[in-house]
Length: 593
Image 1 (cartoon, rainbow, N blue to C red):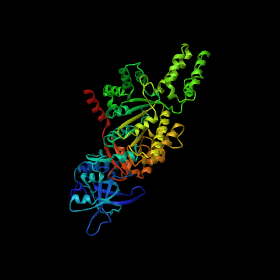
Image 2: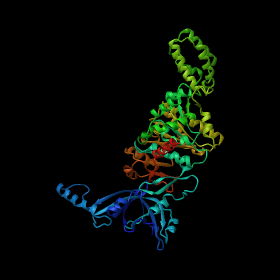
Image 3: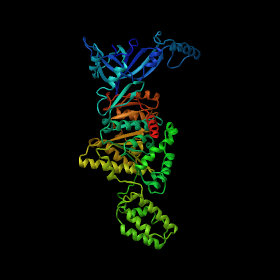
Image 4: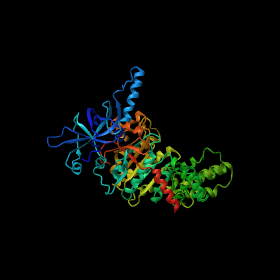
């Protein structure tokens, strides 16, 4: 039957041991040959007869290889003995690895595999199609001593994508099987963003690249109105999402605090610098992946278009700031100002005392410019600082200052059912960004709770998530308030169409309550055992499964999910698209036009 990959390579189930996470671990021996050693991979599916079989039907349980190792039984495993004998034995044994190409000729050479159940099984039928149709949930035990067969790639694909029709809206290809690029892997996009996801991998694993790829897939295949909000603490997503920012014209890059953006951009919006100067400064100061550095100049035209479209906005945490507080921030009581100037300042302040700054910023600006004319150094220093603060707050004079985003308007945009958009939120000050997380998350949750709003879907994605949602004993100040807001979204947001995505290399620092909420994990190399233990505990998977990730390259991930794939709660190796290639192709086409 074609459900098996190789008819000649048949293993044997030697032993099973109970395991608290995977039910049991099966130990399987295959007779060694070089081709099988090369082709048999972690993630491959095996089948073996189970105790559910009857006299008329053979029932097989499906196992997944999580580890494999070649073993030569002429070599001692403890390396004890006379060195000369050991060296000669190793020299002799080494020939057996290369002499057995496609057939085993030595009883002393084996391929030993560890495998876990995927909690699925099937009945052997007369045809492949009938066998596929018999795939069902199964928790039966396999029979030790029975033959073990390797399932074909086509049969594997039908299991991995069980219940996911690629022609159905919201079902999209996320990548391929890690060791076979001919097997496409599909996911349910709505479940991914509504039920939360996590991305865990060490530096260099490609977390940001994967986030860019996921965002691209979500935007292409999600319902109309879907919004993705990325909290970009490192300032790298303008580069990695440049094509999508152009494609979806309602998208924005929001800086929390005016200092977030380079000075030339601010000066351009205030008509003091040319757009080319603003573009050049952004391109020069932007962060680029290594492979996109040669294309740095090609970012100029799309960035220019974003500036012209006024996609850059500034948000200030000013809803609770009064004019009195703005004057204090400008240094009213710390700068030695002449009495005559101080009297004029006090008169202006008294006129607007207690009023919210962003409501009266334009009027205060006019009075400052007309009344403070002495030209004395300290007065000018105070006036310049105050003018800068007021211009940024002044939402009434849009032609003279950078556009302002305030939370009520932002919530209105996020709730718009007719427009898809991406929002990149950055800040020069991490604490200000954490304040913004708390304010925005709390405000949109309360708005949706009170109105019963459930659409459109909105996902809040946190790169360097340990900064926003640290464990309680690490949290302090603004990180404590952002953690509380994200925990609220993680626990109750899905009811109102609000999801979260978290990405980090230091899982051990994450809040454990939030770690347990995502229904989907993407896992790459985690060299620290403490990080692996935390992921294993949160998703109830065995730590031995992580061993295969040590051999992963960029773009390789263990994908495990309760909802989005055809395989429930069982990790399998995935290879995803390279976002840098997508960006490069976009830049080439954009600059041709």
